[in-house]
Length: 321
Image (cartoon, rainbow, N blue to C red; front, side, top):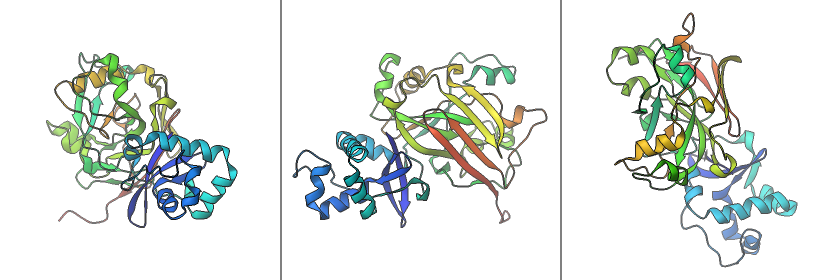
């Protein structure tokens, strides 16, 4: 399933993308509470109460009563009367009219892997690393699909990085590569936006990778059952329609089980934590001549089986104080 988060009336709510529509699961539960005669459409028992509080995002949907959600999707797909009632109630609406959040709105950690595509290492004339190069992106950098990437006042060399991201589904600590995928909820897209001048000039990458809006993520979390092999996915990035990055996740140096095994040693991963797995070749800083993001540009990242993450680039109008 494609699990998502959205903001309606200033409130974070969770939903499921079903073809070109979006099921507002939070609204559906509110409606079922008022229209008890329709609860049998979604559960085997009229007394079944799967929710004690509101769903806010994809990880809420994944970790709480996922069997109930599967029944909802199956019923909506097969019963036009139930789907019609949901549209009438406002719980099923066009997806393109939905203001999406990042699929996970408050991850405990955003970790990322540097230099993890063979061709990306080659374009820098570097040997592949012996171990995964792990760094953090600030949670406050997180922004959603359709949101703007705001160019900072402290950098003139802002770059894009298309990446497949893994969302952790259950607590993991010191897990083996053989069992690592058991702890994965699913996959999404991350743009690891980077200020290259800060990255070059500062010994740590915290600011270069973690400024506000530097972690666009989405459009949803695709559960792992729909992505049986995350190491065979086409990944592309376009700026204003121009193809800048084009690769496949089979070029990863360290695959996802190896990354999770490495990261989780004596470090606890919790549901909703995000690991961005690295970017392929074609980033702006290594093009000839180098190119960096400018206000007015639009970035689209496409990963097969997941979808498209699109964000526009804007400049800040206020000067530094």
